[in-house]
Image (tube, rainbow, N blue to C red):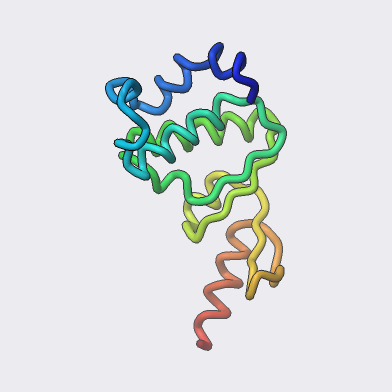
Amino acid sequence: MARSEIVRRFDAIVEFSGLRDFIDEPMRTYSSGMYVRLGLSVAVRTDPEVLLVEEVPAVGDAEFQQKCLGKMEEFRAGGVTIVFVSPDYALVSRLCGRALLLDGGKPAAAGTPEEIERAYLGGREGA
C-alpha cells in the first residue's frame, strides 16, 4: 500500500485495530499481539483479490476476533479468494466452501470442509 493510501485510510486502520489509546506510543512498546492486530487491520483495509490468512482469528480478544471473521465473510461475499490455514474445523466450515488436507506438505485430499474433516479424523483413528 502506498504511503498516501495509508494516510488516507489511517483512521479506519486504527479504529479496526482497537489500538487508538496506544497509537502514539513507540512501536518498541507494542506486544506481539498488538503488532498482529495492527498488521491485520492494514490488510483488511486493502482491496485484495486474494487474501492469505493463517490463524488470524486466534489473535486478540473475542470482539476483535469477531470483527476479523466478519470482515473475512464480507470479503468472501464480495468474491475475494481467501486461502485460510487453520486446524479449527468450525472456522474452516464457516469461512470456506472447499478445503484441502495436507500431509507432509503435500495435498492428501480435497473436498468440502466436512469431507476433509472426516478424511483427517478417519486417518487419525488408525494412528
